[in-house]
Image (cartoon, rainbow, N blue to C red; front, side, top):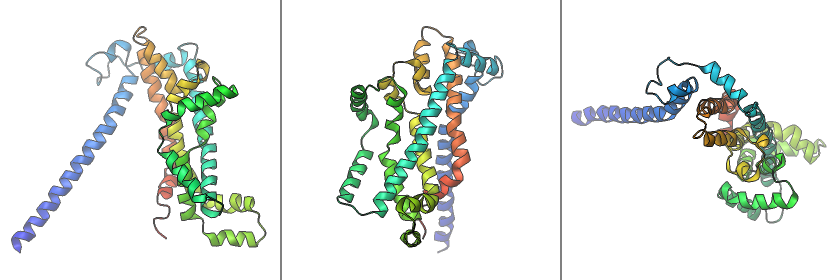
Length: 287
């Protein structure tokens, strides 16, 4: 018994050391690219190709920042504004649509309800790149190719958001509360807006964050739909500059600086909304 008792703490210590090692490696794997990006964004073009990236020499952060917004007559500023419109406005409207659809699937009865929801789940498994060509043909038929709407309209509809909306509705909106609102004379739209939507706040924020990340990093759809560089999002614009960097090396510092600025909205959104996001992820876990 004493030998078994002495080996038990040893196994626990070994297990903790293994877990801590895996966590430390995961943190390094995640943070090292970010650290490289932060350090490289403040380096001159010659220093980027040197071996002293970690040193404080050849530091030109402000110069690179000025060159970024001055390059090609301030093209990056337009790209950044386009991404904010596509991602923030699109994610907000898309989250409202997804949560409303999920609420309808949860609270209302209609014909072929589960079959339609099965189609929603099937759509979750379809890669977005597969839909790019059909979306392009539809946009071409309606004359929307190479317009803002060709990228904005498709991001409003998210099958995974509809699925999450139904899950959040099941976990946050009791049927008894809705029945009480109806008995007080509230219509269906009033009940949803004034009662259910407030309860669905954490879910709405969670769907918004998922949608914001997906739209902000969206690359293939804008590349298919757009040819006017004034309509490019940041992801496609930086790709264009990076392709030109092999011929014009002055693009390298601005591409890295632009990549650093491109991750800031996502970090800010998660930092500001993490309280709602955490509570949303635990929806229905405890009743």
